Image (tube, rainbow, N blue to C red):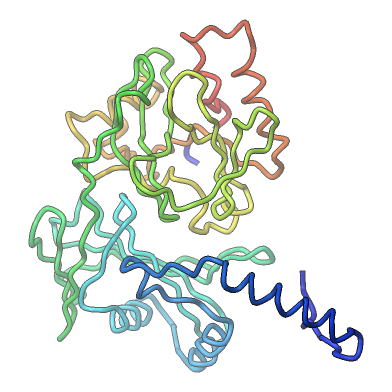
Length: 357
């Protein structure tokens, strides 16, 4: 609950006859003339590439940067941000990383729905985890006017944060008008809101009142920022090349359900660790989030606020109906259930819920 390295190609002219070289050149020229050119549209005309050179040079620039405490970290990060930023994740986290003395720090600034209107912005930073090392100790602080930080609401989805002589406008992600197509909604499901994950992938969050289960369904009403390959002959179990997100292509509805995230990503807490920490907190209506959680798990009745946080301060109730997998073999069970002839359509959707959260 809560918890291929290719050598450079070398061409020796003496190894070929003049005739064969001529044929080779003709073929090459023809291929060049017939090959479609790279399409550069207005949409990607300012697309940036990342290089190892700039990465290493940035590491070098971080030498001597002193981060002794959370205040040092905040002052540095705030000084480096532009005057306006866009916050895409729907739990309103603005993520960042930076190098300091050979280490990589990661963290976030967060304008949480429950207290941003009270003039609070949350700041957290830590040494980033990797495959060899766990994350460093978290440095965290809720910043307010007492710290010289002011938070002013400009509109429901726009806030100005000021510190000393600098102000930054944080534009939150307004996805309130996004609705799931009717042909992807299962019987008994209530739509709770759109989740925009820090990976850039979007999911519709549903609660099924019949089976008392949650599900994250891929939003395909806009471009999906990943490419998927199937792992089985039937082609229904899909894994994202970039994210590692595992989806199942529904037999009865035009939808793909999230069934797994790669556990290597959750262990290092990177952008591909799954959407469970990006709930649609800006768009809660009629207390639907808390009501759904309590309906699925009556043991937490009276213990949660409307955002799904425990009133005791333990954290947030985890909505994670998918598994953390290391091998694609661990995903086979979903297809076995979905193709079981004894599974009638009325209970089919229960195949995609992980009850061992």
